[in-house]
Image (cartoon, rainbow, N blue to C red):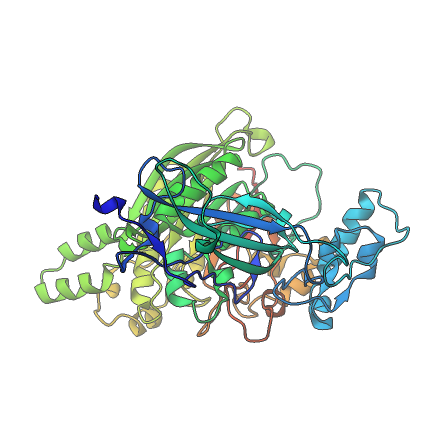
Length: 570
């Protein structure tokens, strides 16, 4: 008998399905079972699935859903918790019932703004407040006989909306590929059941805040979003002990992040920490289906993760019905570091500078042409815009590296500005807090000598001309100067800005840090921000006090920033 024809067996009682954190819609279930041949372990992944052309012995998998609903309602914000109260106004307005539940009075209060939106939407759709039916039901249907409906035939299964509220069952056994085809021996089938499937949390709901008076003339206006998505290769390493496993799982996070991005409907997306394999397999195809064109630049070194080499990078997407690509520039800061080192005559200084500056970070610059004219008087000329997307080095001890990378990027943008006088946007994760040397260079065009000397241990920065001529300002800082009469929410939003530098109070929350690292900057002689995406307070992004990001609702450790712009007549 050939080796591959020798019988495979499932080790009794070896089937495991980790559901300690709960089972959630959209989160893939991956059972584990131990397979042996002649008492030697065989990786289950090496055993072909039933129906595959290869393999004498195959693994037969079946997923089933119970026909009887289980348990009561769950919180609409924290679906891992049981519901304790229900919004009566939602019921009267006939809002989708699962959105009306909350786990506590505090949860209900902190998310009341969501309910006001639900009520207004339903009223605008003509729904009358004419009675309601409470959805609080617990237990199973009395007198019902449980039966099971087959829902899947693969080793893994991703619960769908149809599964919410029901228990799933997984069965697995070894079957022979060769005829005669017989039913599997029930004594050799291993079975595991889940708890009831819970709905996935809703993605964050944030509104635009107007910075200028409402206008009927919006031709040429466009929106740009920047968002560090938290690459999976960093999420698993850095957040495994602080975030529930199910909400940290990439199968869940990618769908939640995609839903959030599509909710914003931005014309231009500047995304950071886009993992190279996920860009090819998920982000590019999914966003192309949504009407976007994609360009990408990954970092200059890869690491081994999940049996393959991958790394993160910057991805810029733009709506094909709003813009077309004219030119793309890729910035590798390592190349600039090598060029800088060549100017040093001291070999020791050259070696020290390279050790400090070679950090693999990149930037992606795109020159886009607007499909429709930017201003009424621009009908006879092209409307171009330059968009820079970057992710600056993260180490908080290396402020000299951050400043040098920002300086290098701005020098490149100045060269583009010299060849073509076009509006510019610079967005990304700069890993620099407001008032830092890198931030000062961006928004002031220069850095104080004292600041430079305090972060320049190798002494190479003082040799650089750390200034630029681009008239850059921060889009969110513009909110500080906006007239609160334009939008009733402006006064409250201004309280969520850093009172000294007028940047957002935070865009990143982790165990050791809370502050602002992400910015959208624009050339104020050619563009004007007309609206920005509202900023949340900590209580709105945390499901419990002192919680860090990511969590079940916010699937990155950063917040998305978004601004609407209009072109200025020139």
